[in-house]
Image 1 (cartoon, rainbow, N blue to C red):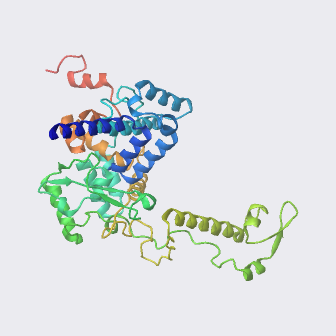
Image 2: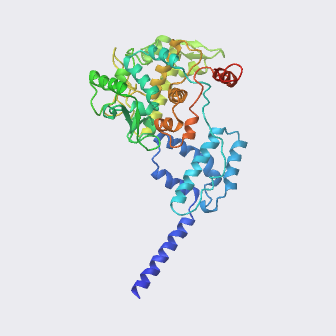
Length: 434
């Protein structure tokens, strides 16, 4: 009797739980996903904005169990009709899929309504990748030995920029590098601890991988760490060894360094604007309404903009933002990558490496401008040209599906004509050479 009552109570509890789950709305499902997501904070902030602006107003109040594929298709068509690009449409589908997957994981639905709804796939088309000869010219144009060694690592291992910058000395194996973490830049606005950088303890897909780079290159990395005083838990490529020495100034010197005090405004005097009204030099009114573009009025608008920016940062952080101190010669700027973003690490930012790479590309005089992140394309394309299988290349790139890897395989140098290639292989007449 008692066991029967307990069984009846358990059945009622399960039924009650199922009823609550069946009333899960899209907004509630998204809130559940966002609370447990392991996505990069900055990426998550972008997803949140897309959901709030584009998905929630249309489908937010609907029950997840009642959403059909037609509803998903109608949402994407609505975005296209409003002029949204392919990238936004694709991201809206990703965000909605995340909410629906949360509901499916909790037993609300059995299948994703977004599964059979196609969305445009945004991809960067690389016409061709850099050749080995062109790469050597770019690498030799980099300003520091650390930057040149880092460039070699990119093409030898096919790492993402964040993966290479997060590499520590303990990740160097006998003839390979162990890719176990990545350097993320959520920024102070999206970071949980208010820091610009964050070390994620996993790769993009969450899987560690071992990329063989050869005994010789692994020895070069170990020797570099030893000569540079890099400890086992230190990053292999800190900013102090990759970036060139800073100039000692973060911004161009201002024309007027004296503050716009009442005494100085009295010295500057007044002027007559184009509307015939007299204005005070060194004021916002003089710049905006009086159309004065002298240095003192430009200083007034500059100081106003800086003050407003500080106030915005204070509101976002909830505290007082530290003021930027004057940089002495030879010191790193306060907010530069050379100042520690992660405790104990003087890391290089993604933008810092990209700027360094682009400057070297210009110095090398190439007839096109390969981006820094396209060294992964070079890694895949060079290995493919040498006869390495797509499966082996996918392992090095960290792809779970070699179909993604084929996107990275591009012509090395100017693309050859298919007929000319076959004529060369088989002989001009079409028959194999004797």
